[in-house]
Length: 238
Image (cartoon, rainbow, N blue to C red; front, side):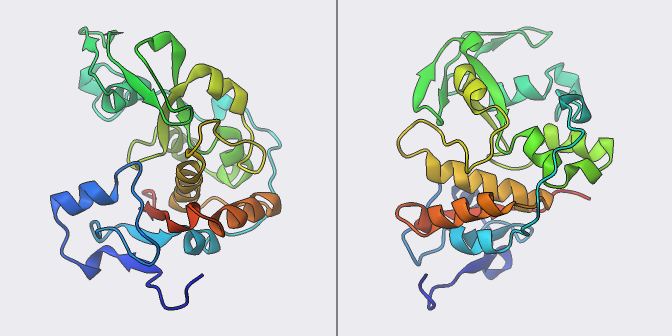
């Protein structure tokens, strides 16, 4: 870790512009070591991966009592009037080629890219929308103490880039509820982005990390190319 680098950048450090915000929130946003990406709006926090990991609180994980139904999803999404639930809204927002939609939000056509696999597909049946941090992991890391409303907000979170991702269904099944120290995306080059999304989600929602998880994250951040990645997040609404 370079003691002379600027580890943390608040959005107030520079006048935000639409272009700066777009660049800062890009899914693959990275910066050369020691250089920060453009600062986004002041409500966002930005840290290099190693420094972001240091903000996580370590605690034992307890998944006792977990059930997927504790996280109501998918709900009506950002725009209930569009008749698309959260899953369909994410599919629409992440499409490389926009699908056709009916009045009831049935999708047809379109093309998507799963960064977990570095594969593209036009087949909706091969895709799913996956939480960056699995619901069971969130439960065991603090969400078991939340209200049902907050768990619903977590499960349908479209307010942060990387919280929900379109991935191949077979890869989602392979990951299941495993922690980041137990499973990594299969594509070369996907791990750093996966770690970045994982850390950003945990910080955004105030979730803890267990010892093995914390050690795995620190190991990733200590090595190229992950050490040059920046974590950008905004705390979730209370």
